[in-house]
Image (cartoon, rainbow, N blue to C red; front, side, top):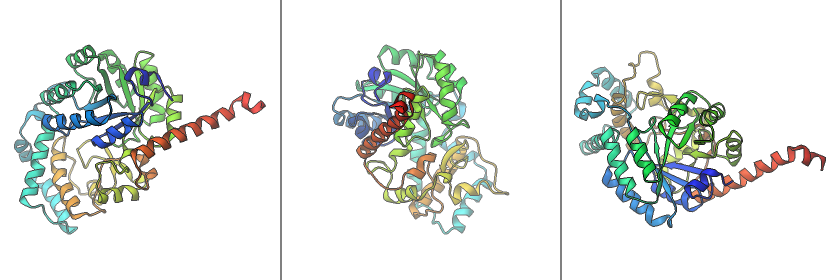
Length: 378
């Protein structure tokens, strides 16, 4: 299964694991894959702590970080959270409060609301141009970080230059073929072609269609990873057949004992069907593939207020989400996850998932080998 991207980055398997959990990053990396830590939810100080811990546990192996790097200045991104909260219409607040009150979900205590507010302030600060660069400076102080992926468009030119000068591979996400062409022109060396099946913010194009388009747009100069709808080794074989050099997986790690999900969240995960992973704007104002719940669907009903633009919808949603989590209400609870959620039915370990993916890949390759004319004649 070793492909050119494995040789360039120094890993054994072209299985890239995106996770906000350092334990998942470490275990995938130790098992021969390439862990990538989602860094934008951390403050610079927190990220330093996480990366030091990863350094100590991966036995010198390389890994990566994923950062939201805005390419242009957005006045709203620099606005204070207090200012943005004041922009949320009373109608929208009343709609959300009534929904949860009618469902019997208690309001948050004052200290919990303050904690949520602080988390919002911290998270938004890391998604400004200056905030992203602060995270990058932390990451670049760790020599084992060999890949930096921009989760929002091509990285700015100065970031591309610095990463390449430091021999750190530059990556970016894309959901359309034309995005790939822009990434290539910007100097990106690795592109994650993410189909609509993926969890989180996604586009409309399916992985099976998107990957060949991106491969064709990239030529031989840029490595392509397939993302979205990958939780089986047979899907890895299919991705390589489409021209990708590896796969980028996220949702499949959520069911492992190492993941950041608590027992309540895992119960929800294991009970969710593939068709319940839907794209909704309730969480951020932009389409997010997430678990369908009464909270997400309420915004789709006639008479519901219009979605607010980013980041206002996210600020409104965060407190409501915290109320639901505290009340442990499965019917209202949701989090971003891909369509592979229907394949995740019980807890396992990261190592077990890695082993299973390799066995399933070999089985798929063997089935294809038996279909070849030479094998048929035998």
